[in-house]
Image (cartoon, rainbow, N blue to C red; front, side):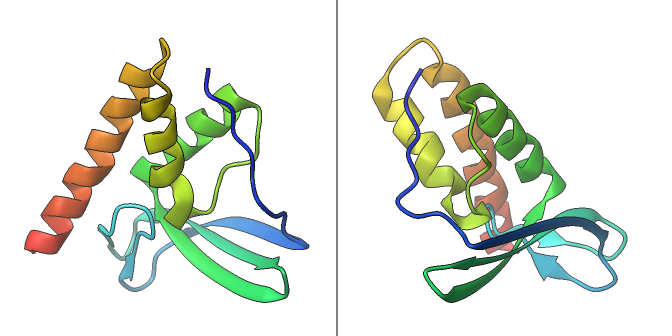
Length: 115
C-alpha cells in the first residue's frame, strides 16, 4: 500500500452533505451536480487560506474508500486525483484498483468537458 502524507493540516475542516438547489461542479471530476443531487460541501482553512470545494457523490465514494484504506482523512476534492495517481505510480498490488478509480474520474471529466 502506498503511503499518504499531507503537507499541511487544516485549522478548520467542515464537511456537509447537501442536496443541490442549483447547479454546481465537482472539484474532483468537473461533472455537473444537478439540482436534487446529493453532494459533499467542504469548507476548510489551511495556512490562513479559506477553501470551499464540492464533490459529486460518485467521487465521494472513491474518496471515502481511499481514506478508509489509507487510514487518513479524505483529501480535498481537487487533490483526490493526484493522490490516486500517486498510488497507481507506486505500483503495488492495489495500483490496479486505484487505476480504475482514476479512469472513472477522468471519464467523467472528459464527458463534462464535451458538454
